[in-house]
Image (tube, rainbow, N blue to C red; front, side, top):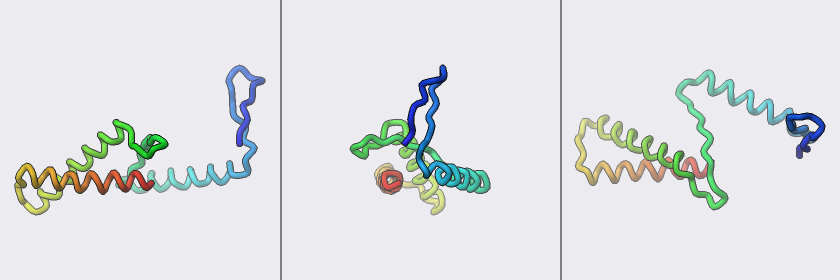
Amino acid sequence: MGRLKASSATPTIRTTSSRAPLSADKIRNYRDTYRRNQHVAFLPACMSTSGRIHGKPLRLIFFLSNKQAEDYFAAFGYQPHRQEFCHRRGVFFQQNQGTIGMA
């Protein structure tokens, strides 16, 4: 792994891992992909060890699901009843939450 270098005023980590160059290449590769495709977004979401998604990313998933439900009914030109909208939003919420949970 890495070791903390205590000789300087600011601590730095020296890596002794042979994977460091591979990790750097992977990061550069993904950065370039996100930079080229403006329709792809990346958001690191913190999860606990029990697999629960913390509040802020969970709220973001809810807003995303709400927007998807609005777009879903707008595509059909249909004004849904409250229960229909809540059901569709719940479907999108579960799909999004499951997708993020598997990442």
